[in-house]
Image (cartoon, rainbow, N blue to C red; front, side, top):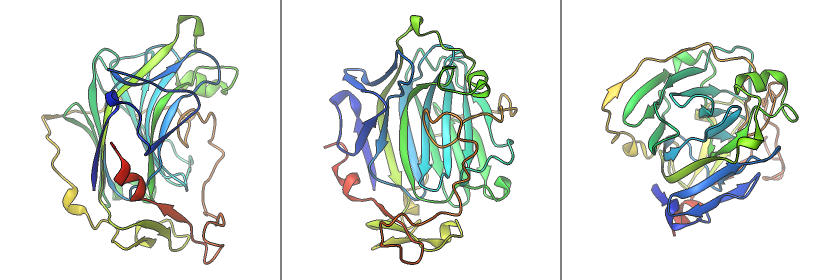
Length: 299
């Protein structure tokens, strides 16, 4: 199904806050960073298995401050947008598979002019064949399955967004501070990211997702009561006004993986995935809830 959240109307019970206290107003939900260790974010209580995520937002300003929109699986598959507060003209697009950082040719800097001064809609469109990133109606990047060289994200994802300080030298290693174009000067804060609304379309159907084995492939994911990519008819419908070339592809190898404000997680491999006991440990499977949270979205 497709769900639509207007955060100007307040909080919804399909997203849970962590790392700080997001605030709500007529502008939407605000994520403010004002002191070390603060990393407010919202995380969905549901998962999608292929789909489209649209977020309308303003990025946070400030050297070392990072605004993030992340699709993240429990096995550290990841697709993201990240805005560095030191530059309001571009956004970083990136992806990871199972948390692996053996190569660093996956990130790009793409144009996103005035991203701190106006609300812009950003889209991640994820199918078995490709991932596309859009900025305000402009297609800025396409990644085909074969182009990912075995690193294509393809497991059930949560949706997360928020702000954090990559430029905090007290909590992050030097490489992360450099990547975030820090250090962060908290005396100039608070630094705020604002999200007006979000639209999420799941391209699969059913009640829950299950890992069938440790292969890490999307074909091994099972959907109870439905079909993986069974809502492929929900794909498309994006109005494209232009296409843009990337600004750069020399993203630092110290870019963090694993979500928002996680610090230096480059040592995490995330695979092979081990059972967590949610299914009693049978067959190396793990269960992922969907549906219930989606039905409550926007209520």
